[in-house]
Amino acid sequence: QVLTALKESGLIVAGDKHWSALLGMKPDKLMPSLDYYTELKPFYQKAKVNLNITSAQMKTGLNQRVFDVPASGAFLLTDQKEQLFELFEPDLEVITYRDPQEARKLARWYADHPADREKIIQAAHRRVTNCHLYRHRLGEILNTISY
Image (cartoon, rainbow, N blue to C red):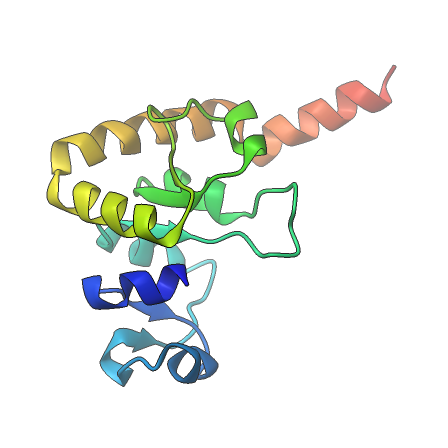
């Protein structure tokens, strides 16, 4: 529903051929799957707004995109998950939507307001690089098991 709501807003999807059939998208709006290590960062950086939709199976978790997009220095618009607010400051470091219409509205706003978008990009990038790298997680694990 979220992708359908954004389809007319210049949405470009990277993924396998099944996305085209699912969304009824034209081939020029569908890119092939991207290599995580070499192609994803530049893809995120080119987009004014990167959309995240957490898998329905992840009721209480966050996916990797929540960290990857800000780490790459790009803007993320993501679905609202309570766990997100334990790691990021809402409306300062992360922008969330609750439904397809809000996603469309926020995507348009941030696409059209580069200064506001840049503030979020900078704050989110700082948060990820200062708190959410693998070395931070490994440190937490080591501290937990050493007690």
